[in-house]
Length: 519
Image 1 (cartoon, rainbow, N blue to C red):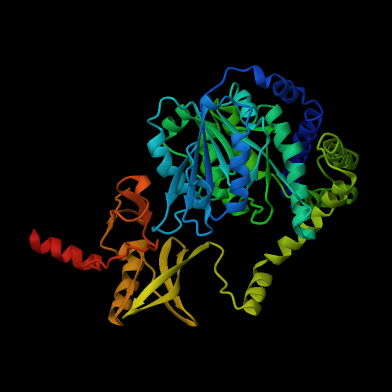
Image 2: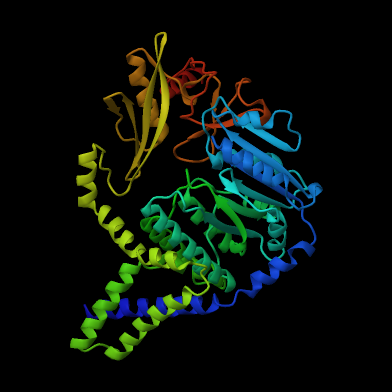
């Protein structure tokens, strides 16, 4: 017990000194102020602005207007808008539009930001006239000097993440507290780390990267917040860390904005994976990996309260007064961090409520509490190491099309698929590969005369042998959807297509038997 307390106190003290150093460094941000003043005089790079949109017609129209109003030379940037299966009439914004290049993804389902951007990058990486990419979500709003500011930041950094400003006027109490905490985290923690030259996490909502680096790595990774963290660590590992720049600001529409944070379990697993490579000369990567273990405010308080009580009543390797002093240093560091965090008095009050929200969030996600909550709400309680993704699909039953749902479940390294129609469910057995679980479901539906109308069951689909276990990717060879993407178009096995044609061989086992007979 004594050794555990010793280690916890050393950890808390190290974080306290790190926190104080960040708070003091954040007091002087003249570096960013000077860069902002000199931004107009930098030599202009050729930029490719890539906007991803999925049913964001209103905000997309505003963003396009702001792009057209940039003070950046029009000959030095191109704009590409990806419309990912938009059903809100976003295409109408670009009728007879020559300035914006449109990539209209339709007929193959919603492929997602990561795949949509990858498709575009595959084409653009051959364009030697592009120096850097600027990725924006369509729910953002920017100032007229946005691209000028981006260009200035690229002089010293190859990869940049910008500041996201959230309009809190239409948010509820809980979301307002989270928004204030995010503002504090960006204006203090991320900015101070950047001033020290430390790595930041990539944010696909506003992300800038040089084309040469994309060619070196091969792609970007925008699947989710966890994959963005992994991608950020990769950048640090190759000596091109992502840096945070508060001058690059976007205002986000809070209607569909999600407050995202990497899971603790994922951060710990990433730290374990990075541990063998931490003892190297790459300080930025080693520090970035160590920063994954940043503690929750409640963990810090529990450590300090426990050590204070123990050192007051029993022998401890440091005196009670020293423990108290380090605790007061932590409080002083927090007070100093507020000075240049650009928070109003009201926002500071809301920030002080964040620990209460955090505690409620922890309690809400306790296994027992979560199990009771899920039972009340009629939600399945999945094990901690289980991931589930739901997609809407269509099943052909004779002349009728039935709207159903598929759940792709990964549990303890095994995969299964659940088919849901109204209140009826069928779950496959566990398989090593997701594609095999899907094949079992297809055979079951075939027995009842049903056809699952997804890419994997379509005659236009061809599998992509990419070395992955699950084999989730493939190509759509139909001429009907999205002719602007070229041939063939990458897709995923579960996507739904309006040009669906049932495959003759709907069973991978049958295909193997057929191939064997030919041999």
